[in-house]
Amino acid sequence: MMEMNTLKPNVNRFHNSSSLPDTAEVAVVGGGPAGLATAIALANEQIPVVVIERSNYDQPRVGEHLTPEGVGCLQQLGLWTQQFIAQHQLCYGVRSVWGEAEIAHSDYVFHPYGCGINLSRPAFDITLADLAQQKGAHILLQSKFRRAQREEEKWRIVLETPEGTQNIRAKFIVDASGRQLVLAKRQGQTAHIQDQLIGMVCYLQTRNEANLPSEDTLLLESCEFGWWYFAQLKNNRGVCLHLTDSDLLCPGKNGHQRTWHERLQSTIYFRDLLSRYHSAEKILIKSARSHCLNQITGEGWLAVGDAAMSFDPLSSMGITKGIKSGMMAGQAIAQSFRGDRNFIIQYEVDRTREFNQYLKMRFDYYQIENRWPSSTFWKRRHKLEITNEDRNTISLSTPIFI
Ligand SMILES: Cc1cc2nc3c(=O)[nH]c(=O)nc-3n(C[C@H](O)[C@H](O)[C@H](O)COP(=O)(O)OP(=O)(O)OC[C@H]3O[C@@H](n4cnc5c(N)ncnc54)[C@H](O)[C@@H]3O)c2cc1C
Image 1 (cartoon, rainbow, N blue to C red):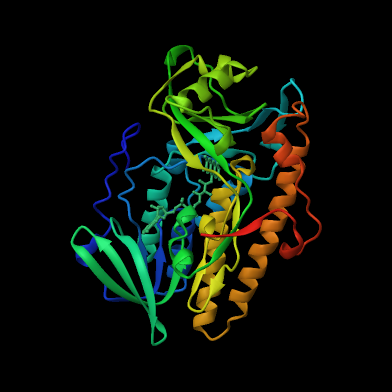
Image 2 (image 1 turned 90 degrees about the vertical axis):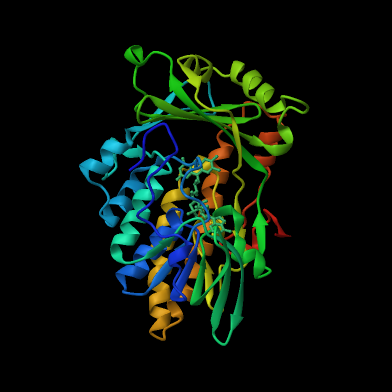
């Protein structure tokens, strides 16, 4: 499927724009975990669905760790096979330096699923695309969503493809474009943006494979300017992230490199850990902010996964949340086609509740770290106030036009 350590996936079995159907019942914009889970759920309901994906799955995708809850989702999808496990890296818990200088252990063994997993991406996304296609979904690669217009109860969707501009008609559109929010933006939606967190991401390769003690837990360490995260990946690879706010990066030429290296020196454990690896690629900068759309559903459309709401990577919940919301969205759309819109309404209510629960959990977790009272990063996270369940009364964010 995917040659490891290269990004040259064989994706010839998927469709390209020369085989674009004229119509589909549902068009899903974005072939990440959330969009593909939506397509699987729709295909399970025998609803014709086309997934519009701009890439060829040939670029790095961040987000690797699934907690045991995520493993449960994979089991539900029927993906948890020996073959699947062999492509990824099992993970048995979390070791964290958070709130104090000592390492704390949290073991997954007591969870019903017993372990988590560190995914190799985009190989994981391709596995989901394969499953969606086997179930009957039409997976269209190298096709970029441009705009959509509602005409007589249907959408006319304009795509940019290697063959030029093309159109497709669909009854319903799902925005699964991740943090790009491509449809929601066009619909004039606003997003409640909570912070300006970014992830500096570095993929690593071991220096000496023979002597490497395998890291079978996730590692977290907080520092004055944010926190660090490390996950062991398959084939002697690892991924290390430094999470901080975008305005707290070192300024000037080589600012990213300086931020990384200076802050790494101030860590207790990561400095030693990273000395066992060398960087496989350069540092990528990714937005890791939390946001929630003002409106997650509308006339003939809804948003799933990160397009609907995005979580701090601290939660390790982004992929699981994306898959779950996709599965629920698929069922809600199927019910609405049968004339019952209540499921779509419930889908929106559930997402709002989920976001509030997430904000509380994030707030509680950041409260544990008090070692840098004058640090801007930590002060920002300590002053948030959550008053009750209702999103409108959470004094966290200002709605921002996206
Ligand atoms: C630094 C960082 C670390 C993270 N770590 C973790 C982790 O350890 N565990 C975890 O569970 N989550 C993690 N996450 C979150 C996780 O990556 C996301 O929540 C998850 O990938 C969301 O899935 P999605 O399908 O909603 O969006 P995405 O995975 O972003 O997929 C969106 C898709 O839409 C496509 N697309 C975009 N625009 C267009 C367009 N115009 N036309 C067609 N296609 C388009 C993209 O190519 C992409 O395939 C992390 C995130 C960040 C930023």
